[in-house]
Amino acid sequence: MQTIEDENLLGNYLKDRRAKLSPAAFGISSTRRRTPGLRREEVAQRANVSATWYTWLEQGRGGAPSADVLDRLAKALSLNDAEREHLFLLAQHRPPEMHFRSFEPVTPQLQRVLDSLVYSPAVVRTPLWDVVAWNDAAAVVMTDYATLPPEERNILKLIFLNDRVRGHMVNWERDARSAVAAFRAEAARIGASEAVQALVGELGNASAEFQAIWRDYDIQSYGEGLKHFRHETAGDLMLEYSSFAVDGRPDLGLVIFNPVTADDAERIRALVESRRAAA
Image (cartoon, rainbow, N blue to C red):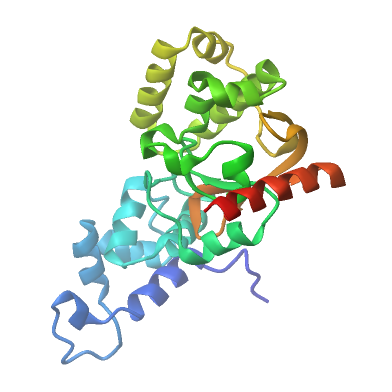
């Protein structure tokens, strides 16, 4: 009996995607075709690879494709982000390098998820740690991101260059080192080395503290933990945080902060309701 390990999963996936494409969508005549979809040589031409090699790939004997070839095949087959990731997992047993879209708004559905967390500060950030979405609780506890230009809504810039945010962080040294170590780990996984280098260079020029911490080469996962904030009007707030990947958008991360005690929750509630009343 054939097992899933014996199946030509990559070849079957390529054939399935190819068969579901409409030739007309690519300006190709659909007459005199015995099977639906694009022909192998048409996919090969669109991906700029040999038709013979592509045929072998579908047959399970084409060798391991490079990331560049897989990207071209993904475009040739009009794969969406999830389908492209699946192609890489089948071919290379790893996801593709992450490509992110700076400052692109989140979907309305994701914003509604943030807004449903009424008294739990929550933000969505890119791999460069630019905050692209937030809720009212985050605006009153951390900083009002709406008052900042998009390029200044960066968590590392706020930690090292914004005196107000720094003043909120009771354990600034520990939290700053933790943030830099987690960012370094994430930076190694994303396909944006020039953008990472530009941000690190900017922060290093502006902050000797960041430069010193960055040179320590510490690595850690962001994961979850505890933050101690000191707010101007609400006083000390203890929040536990957890981070999550956004399904379908591997370039985005969701971070949710939950009040540790009922007293913390009540003070955040008062801040949020005061903000909404003023608005």
